[in-house]
Every structure is written in structure tokens, then in C-alpha cells.
Length: 304
Image (tube, rainbow, N blue to C red; front, side):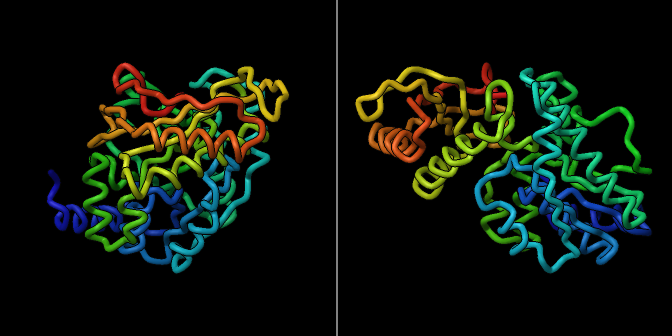
């Protein structure tokens, strides 16, 4: 286990030594990028420009919360929903989707960097991201999902040697709000990897609502390491005595230490029925709900 205070001191010094002019920081609001942001702000203050990109692939209410928590920094919010949807159009293969999102992120950051003459990019890559990308398990948008040509002089990754539980320890030592330090992991490609097949605005609307319901029902009471809803495809159902060909939503809740392995949570029948009732009742186009009991391995935590 990393010695937290020593790590913070060393990370701040390394950032100071690496950056002597403006740098942009990729901020998603998750614990990894949040820790990278606070470390960078301690090191170089106003030289770091955190940029949050509203991709249209985020959870419900995400952009507003980012503004509230990180408004004290030189936070920039970029609305790029159309750009990401266009990049994903027609793609169905998971790795192609991840790489399309990764490249679009980089191009957005490059565009913003040119506006302020920033030559450095800081991001919250952690050790499992690199293991899974380099091991061929899946391309993380900030590692294997990056394009081969990048117009930054340097990409700086101050927490790339840490596992998720270590990042959380650092977050607590930095006195980040508990909702950040204990926040569930959320994939860099966002809800695009919780949709099997092509990503569309309609599918995003459905899966965003389903994820919000699952989080509302499970986070406080069951405290999963990660929980989510994914859109699998369509199946036949009946609503109001009418046949529908509606969406199938898979619910997932797992326990884990660092995300490298995971166990499905044994949720009660009562809570599963409540989640099913809310999703099919509140989202008219959903026909059925299933619960994923696969551990990691052989499954991954996310569906793509």
C-alpha cells in the first residue's frame, strides 16, 4: 500500500518539475481525474486549466455537479454532444467505439489547448487502466483508445502507479468530498459502453434513466463497488394489454477491491423486483429487466 502523504508530496513535486506553463487537465468528475486535478492545482495553481467535456454520454446531472465541486479552479466546460454522437455513428464493435471516443476526447482537448497555447495534457490514468489496455482486455479511452498522432508535447499522468483503492486513500488525504473519494467508477467512454451495438440519442436517453434508477436504489443501502444498467437489445413485452417490442435492460452490481476482479452482489428479491418495476414503469420503451450474475473473470464489469 502506498504511503499517502509521501505520495502526495512526490506527485506535487513531479508536476512542478514537469510543467512550467499552461496545461489542460482532462476532468471527468470521477475520483481518478479529481485527484489528478487537486494534485495539479496544488503544484502549479492557475497554470492548470481543468476541462470537463460534456459528451452526451454522461450520467444524469453530471455537468451541474462538476460545476459545483470544481468551480474554484479555472474550470472550462465544453459542450460536445454532437461531436461524440457523430463519431460513434454506425459503430457496433466495442473496441471501435472505445477508440472513437478516445480520439474525439483528444481532438477536443487539442482544440481547447490551441486556444490558450497549452502544450501539456494532464490525465487521471491509473495502473489498472494500463494493465487492461496493454493486456488486450479492453482499450481504456485514455490509454489504448488514444490515437497514434497526438498534438501535445507531453501527457502527464501523476497517479498512473496507483490502484483504485489507493487513489481513494489519496482523495481522502486531499480532503476531497466523500461523494468524490467514495464515488463509483464510471467508464471514460461513458454510457456508450453500456449500450450493446450502435449508440443513438434514444438509446442514451433510456440507459441514462435506467442507470439513475439503479443508482438511486442501490448506492446508499447496498454500497456496491460498482453498479450500472446496460441496454442489451430488444425483446417482446406487454404493456397496457398491448404488445411492444421494447428494450432489455441488464442490471449489474458487483463487489471488488481494485476492479481487477469482481463478484456479483447477492441482491434481495425484493430490491430486484423494485428495480424492475421502476425501470419498466418509468421508461415506457423498456420491456424487460435482467440481473447479471457473472463474476470478473470471465466477464468484465462493464458490458463493452
